[in-house]
Image 1 (spheres, rainbow, N blue to C red):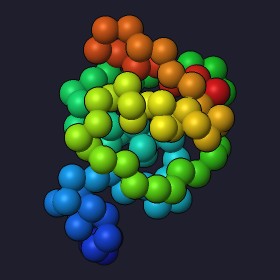
Image 2 (cartoon, rainbow, N blue to C red):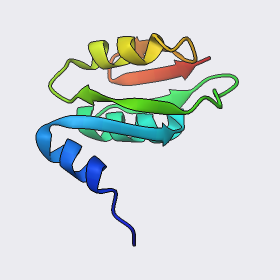
Image 3 (tube, rainbow, N blue to C red):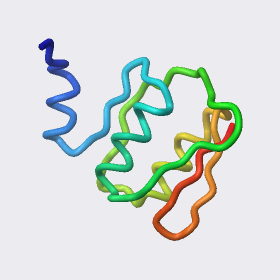
Image 4 (cartoon, one colour):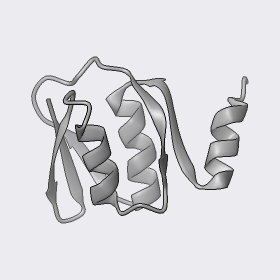
Length: 85
């Protein structure tokens, strides 16, 4: 198994690190960290995500940063986040 050293270091330092990842992969990490349920509605973006975001941010802030790509939008209902294009 190959380990992404940069991702491991980012995780240890308190960051999510996305390296050419699908929204499904990004949301799996976010869901695990914030203990939320994620569902997808409609067409799922094929956009790949790159970047680093602090895990110390509120989930609202993380989702706002992801929305800045204009590739995805989110609706929050309690502990469920719905991902839309």
